[in-house]
Length: 313
Ligand SMILES: NC(=O)c1ccc[n+]([C@@H]2O[C@H](COP(=O)([O-])OP(=O)(O)OC[C@H]3O[C@@H](n4cnc5c(N)ncnc54)[C@H](OP(=O)(O)O)[C@@H]3O)[C@@H](O)[C@H]2O)c1
Image (cartoon, rainbow, N blue to C red; front, side, top):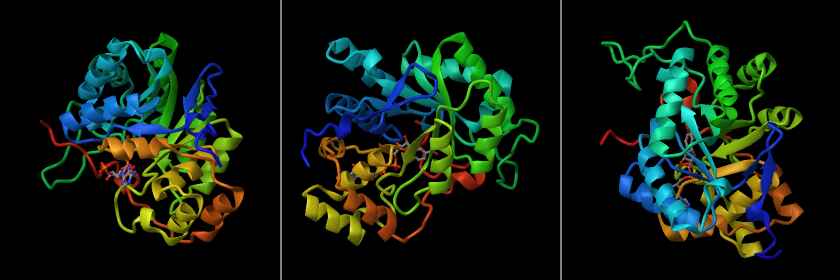
């Protein structure tokens, strides 16, 4: 095993025929604008080339500020960075997709994005309220818009050339199959929670067979209990291979050909998360077959209501 074995630079081909996604991704769900800017700058400078954003994170302009400043410095070119962002639930109506997409591009200060995804399969009441509620506090859904209707809106964006690939997030296998079978432009990426406590094996099998890349969020366990970073199998392997638990978890995710997302606000954690090395086959097997804890940490798949969102500033 060597630090320079290239695992951190792994790129996975996309099914749009022309692009690849860098496997190690940096997630931008950071509530504080100053921390967002600092983390995006550091992660670019420390080597990350894949970024996950969303209109729902309410910080695309801060991510865009940091990226623009780095691109202007001239050491990293826009074309070498893969940027994805996501459509929120209140914009699922096909006529709302293009304006929502253009607003994201403007906030990110980019001419195109590499990936645009539907954040959840739940259509909320169309309008500018991201979290529409009735007088009892219940979410107001939009029963008139199907996921396939919204997908068609995303296909038009690819036709118009400002978006290179399109994807889905937080959908079930059944929903993925439904969109895949109806799609003129196939989903290139599926973003779901995935880690050794939620390996998503069935979804991953379907993705592999159909050329879809699985992007894995909560790759380090979302900072929640039960703490993946303290799992005895993970910590024992980390000790054995002289890496840290986050590095073991990220290497496992890349070696099973998924694209893990992490979010860290300190430069130390960001550097650590990029400094991964290939794990021996027995360690991969031990994680995949020896860990039996099963838990979903993020409930967004149940209702479309997210757990971790910055407050409106
Ligand atoms: N599609 C969706 O619905 C969805 C949902 C959630 C997240 N996401 C995406 O996934 C991204 C990743 O978020 P996540 O919460 O899943 O990330 P995560 O990396 O599993 O968890 C983040 C937590 O781990 C800590 N951490 C990061 N690196 C560490 C290290 N080397 N050592 C110790 N602790 C470390 C962070 O603390 P520090 O800040 O102190 O470093 C933070 O508390 C998000 O930013 C977002 O882009 C998508």
